[in-house]
Image (cartoon, rainbow, N blue to C red; front, side, top):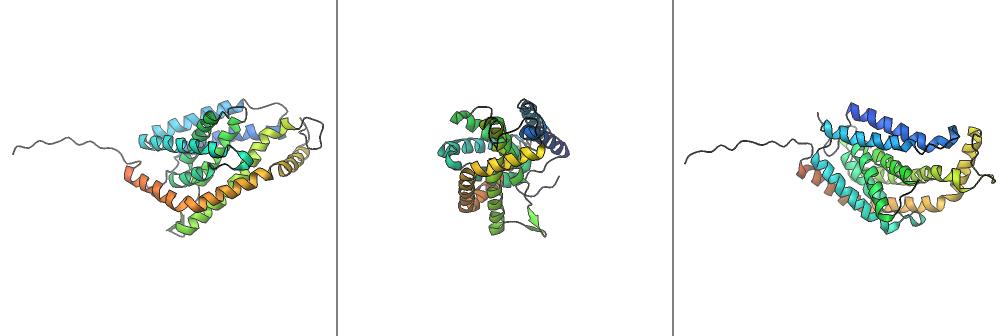
Length: 269
């Protein structure tokens, strides 16, 4: 199987598992618009599907032992970055590392990096709660998006200023998308039931969507805009050396190259 240097390609099996996982998790985000009851439990199935994705990638050889080791190293790096911002006013310095690493190693690896790094960082910062499953899959989707960016245009590799510009756009989009996804888990509970922006259980779809949009823009811009500025600035400053370092790691470690052992032949002098 031929691959673009530095990128893991999704197998057909992995595409199916990843699509299934994402659909399950998406149902956990949008349940207020379509279902009266709470679907937090659905993330149990989504997390199980994510574990199966990792196992299947290892089983078919799309991710090898060296790739898993690097996944652990990058997860630890992002975990250590998270307390620097702790989410204060949206100043979260983790997204640039996730986006750049996912760009180098591809969508499935980026998805797994988002999930593992958000989980471990929550354990470190004490951020474990009902919101964690939402954060985990939001981060996974951001890694998936960054890893899915095209590697070539008109037959030429996308590198240099063009690549950096694409990553900055993804960083800005991710900052606002993360805010929307987090508000989806927060909005049904935070306002009670007696305000003009409150969630209406079993209410009309158009009414709840309108209330959510108004709530989001009224409450989240002070977080989303600083997050977008910080993420895009860090990408602009670090993308070139970070991309180069990760790509050198890919080639020097010979990821996805089978290890072969040859019998030593002893000869007489």
